[in-house]
Length: 395
Ligand SMILES: Cc1cc2nc3c(=O)[nH]c(=O)nc-3n(C[C@H](O)[C@H](O)[C@H](O)COP(=O)(O)OP(=O)(O)OC[C@H]3O[C@@H](n4cnc5c(N)ncnc54)[C@H](O)[C@@H]3O)c2cc1C
Image (cartoon, rainbow, N blue to C red):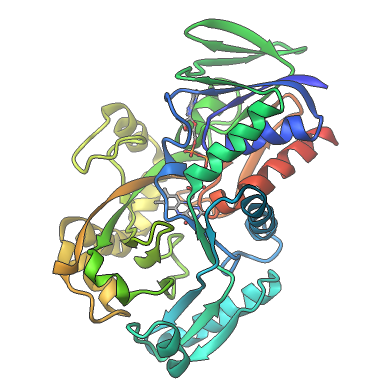
């Protein structure tokens, strides 16, 4: 058994730290989080959806770990009385051109073992979601919602109960492999560990690079803004209403999502963020922007995605355009129905050739492991990602 450290107190870091102790892989685990609270970044700024596994390439890590993650999350929620509402989801085809894509999603869902998923006609859609309009839809009855900050805190409680140590407000600034051990540095000094797992989310590529891991893929931060339906318009949505995603694009498109507290979120869109961890609309980080601008992969990506960038850019500057994207399948929705609902920033890994990394990427050795790409459904999959990493170390 080793003495281990985990960098990052988002849902994946906390799940890994807990799994290292529960599995008996580590005798002692210290979790380092630079903020003064857990779940401060992606984990605390997402849609809260427990994805069922509809979209992912069969056999991919996303497909496998999402399905396993749902089971583990549901089990934890039951045991610990955590919020978990299987409210169901519809993916709405607005016209004939989207039907073949809906068929392709159904095929993937079935290959991934998603329970109960089926195509429905417009009449059944109207029964499930009376305010949605489409010629057909894919219905996933087991897609659920939760509060990932609450789940993270529950996992952290179990970690601490099992003897783990949480060091909040402590940033890891260096990682050096000394052969027999990894030396981890913070402003308080250095410590040696037999194993370090980097779950630093939006900073994961920097932490990996600092330790000598490959430069690429890089994290390119894409923000997603939300609006919230005013309380008297929440009746427009029962569960989760999604458009058919554009297969050339990794994000799912502006959707309507019920939140566990009953609020309805509209969004998120997707556009290059002014900083990796800055949530104000006009905040900019010169360091982060310079790093993105200095990465040739970003310019290749930008050149290949001009129509999508223009489309998303219009949703950034115009609330009307943003809401129009959702009005396409919930026509009663009006600009006056919404108020600003905050934003999240995705840690999306990008290759040197400008392609976005689709699957989860976990690299490293038996002494140092780096979670280099864990976008959505990363929160859904968190406990399964933890199992996957810890099993990989132990074998
Ligand atoms: C807008 C949006 C919507 C999403 N919707 C969903 C969804 O509905 N369902 C779903 O399953 N997934 C969703 N996701 C994805 C999901 O939120 C992420 O996959 C998941 O939260 C990743 O968790 P994490 O622990 O890797 O990262 P994070 O939650 O970002 O945590 C990383 C932590 O590392 C810390 N850290 C960084 N550097 C250091 C350092 N040097 N020293 C110490 N600490 C450090 C950070 O402060 C941070 O707390 C969404 C994401 C976004 C942004």
